[in-house]
Image 1 (tube, helix red, strand yellow):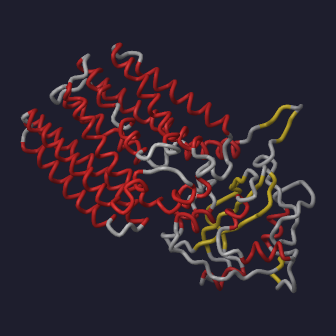
Image 2 (image 1 turned 120 degrees about the vertical axis):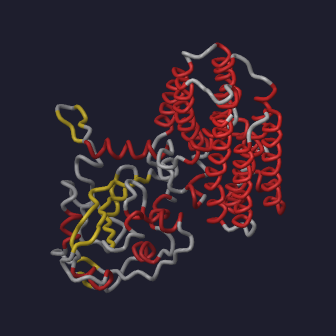
Image 3 (image 1 turned 90 degrees about the vertical axis):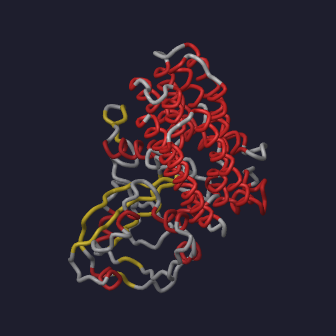
Length: 458
């Protein structure tokens, strides 16, 4: 049902033969790029898809239909299809309002795209009808060779309908905004919250000799979640001019133009306010410590412009739950709390430097500072030395507190996990460095299990 195009304008030909993501090409124009999901789920194989999918026409398959927009103007209607028995591809297609192209060519650098086959769509082709039917507006010319020139979103998706002069916000619009905010706050990636939470839990158990108040634990768990969310929003706001140039971050909501600066600042302020409300039932020392905690967390993203070791600054930000935990439970911050903070600082520098190694080529191009760049060829050695300092300090804390054998078993498990990370980062492979970063969740959990069991047995 698609006929071969005899000739194409150069602009169309460039779009079709571009080896990288079309989404990235659209993004590079400086206009606000967004993805509006029309539908995704079970569908039927069309005649010209049968050969590529290896399925008979009319058989069930998984399909995703989206519109790519620039400044809310739809420019591309896209259908992506996968076999239902191909579980590796289904999670890739279930991306919500994230660009599939940026996923394939940004997050999966090992993927090579075969040359595209393209042609004009006949007027009776199902995709031509779907594209034309997605808008009541006439003739918006797309940059791709689709004969149906009317590629606007459905009225309840891209352009709010109006009744009596007032905008009508549809459920689809609300869904898209929620998805953008969820990604901005990293609710889809809990690793940051967990890495922030583990040392806070260590502190609460150590400060109370293994018997923290459950209300305090609940406050700190929820506060950690909210403050990490606020920190991610501020981080993306600060890096809004850089993220589009880094493969790993090119799909963040700011990078693809899905949220505005005003939206981000209001969201960060709301999260910070909710966090402060959680602190109100606690003592005055904890409230006082919450002020530098917020300021350090909010200012961290900007240190990447001038400070050669921003990971150390992040280490302070990610460790402030420790003195706050001691203050909340005991009303004071002893030297032990600061030693625990120092140990955690070394751990943060270690795992975040491994994270920075993955982004090192991109960071060098855009000119920001990281510990991986500062350490140069000694970045892997620096990571392992920081891990060693962390383990040594944690061992010393255990001796000082006369903790039982499960604590040292937990440290031994953490050390084994860290040695596994060395094997992952020593060749500086991007994917393996990122995996090493993620594996630090297990390091934190192993240490906490040791603390918990030590006090339980004691």
